[in-house]
Length: 320
Image (cartoon, rainbow, N blue to C red; front, side):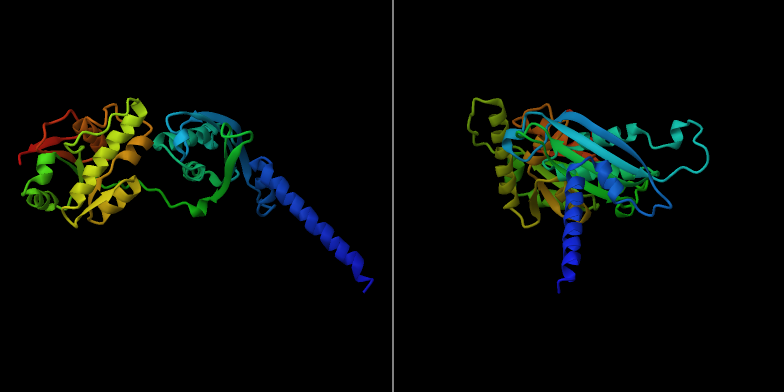
């Protein structure tokens, strides 16, 4: 029994060392994690890295994080397949550092995000589209939310990314704006049946009801109130038919368009999360829906019981 004691001590020592290594990797630069997770040493992968890339951006799920920017730090390591043959000092043969910073910029520009996890996944996916990239380590940290850095780190490999092709399978809907008179009109269902007859996805939009919204005497608060007033009216419209489903996110809208659901747009989330949001006030419902139609790359905007707004998509007006 006594002879086993040295072995037990060695095992405890090794376990402690392994735990120390894991902690070191967790808090070190992602390049340390990349080294620790290296594959077959006979076919090593090259690595490029981006360290302490700081961007000021609006991000976060808390209300205090809306309408303001905070510093976010990016550390990225990309494992790339070694080049065959001479490089010849040719930048087109390697994965440029610019591809990493461009992936970050593109992910930030696509939409306002609440979660660092979502942002990290978007950055990783954009990098792994590049043919040289095999695996990527992304660490993102908020620098202004407390006395320390708050962040996430993810690892993604090429085999976890869906192949990207050039086929545009994005639905292009028909966006329809209904005036309050159109909502109450007895011919509403008839209009809807005619608009979905050709199979084009349909998204219904409304403005606020005729009941005046509260006056907040504060720009940001009033914007929220006006958006919520539209959403109240959206729910009133949805109450008129089991076919009308109130939807607030782009993901839900994409699913609805692919599955033949008639959506009623609740605008708050998409408007507030937009990187390049509408210049029009939510109280200008026609201008807001024109912006939304362009964001959705709609085939057309149909105005029922309302005047024709200035829009970047084809517009037609239907009488009640």
